[in-house]
Image (cartoon, rainbow, N blue to C red):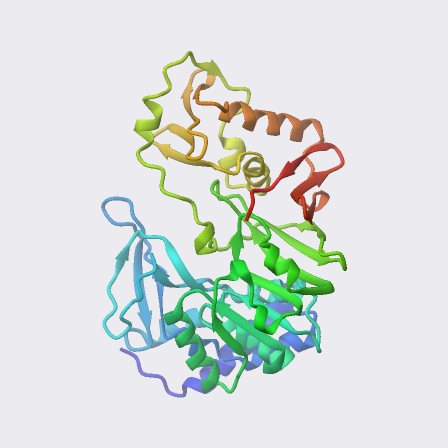
Length: 399
């Protein structure tokens, strides 16, 4: 193990380099946020985290290697000041950072989000001096510290659903001199004791905008959050709240994803083979293949969100070359199997799942493939709807 010569000096140098990099990339136009990046010691908020190994294990699962100052000081400090998301928890299990073990696979349930995205969220929410801000998802506390440095601790409330996570974040924040209002609470319901807020920023994603957040925002205030769902389609939206309790805003561009709020996570749906066994009808050649929504492109990322808005209860899984689409609410299912003619589609249940996907894709193509910024989300007492001048209104699921 390599011991540090001067930890704080090295950390300050790395913070400065990170700020320079962000400024060059256009992330630090506001001098207040640059000062925050140069001041807040991220390494104090991430005493341990996981990084992926270069190779998977024999079963194809990602090997996650624990990183701490004791195990490898240089790697730990460099990663702490890299523009990377650092996974701090899997499957809700709190690691023993005194004796950490390598992990294989698993679902990340807590992390320190990459710093450029943290700054982008605060900046996109148009946070300014004098604002009272609610952060949903304290995590390690690093993002909270940046907000405290920018607004002052008295203007910041941060809530976290995981008590142990919040306890660790609180210790790090207080050790650095920050004293925001902290609470163990479910972001779905905001935090009434400190409301109303001028800004609400969520570091987790929701299937729909929680009504409590709209109710806890001052008229003219803004809510920045990420919408997601069971197809793992994502879109960010910046809403402005009106005096009548409604809210409206455009989707923002880019490919940003956050972990789902735990109450909005996708349910387990069983064995895809069991669903496929019910598909006894004739097959047809699909008009569109699944790559339209699964490819690693910005358009596919956007399309997956639009499809998800039309099929909010559907989930997708791949077994070999076969794509399975299942809906645990309606009981509908579909499979897509590749052949020489394209994709053979089989469907069963009350909803023709892939037919509904194809209708969304047809409408999207006919409208000229409009980007995220052309869609408006409207939140009102009758529900939440995604609107576009050339496409049918898409209702979001009840939160």
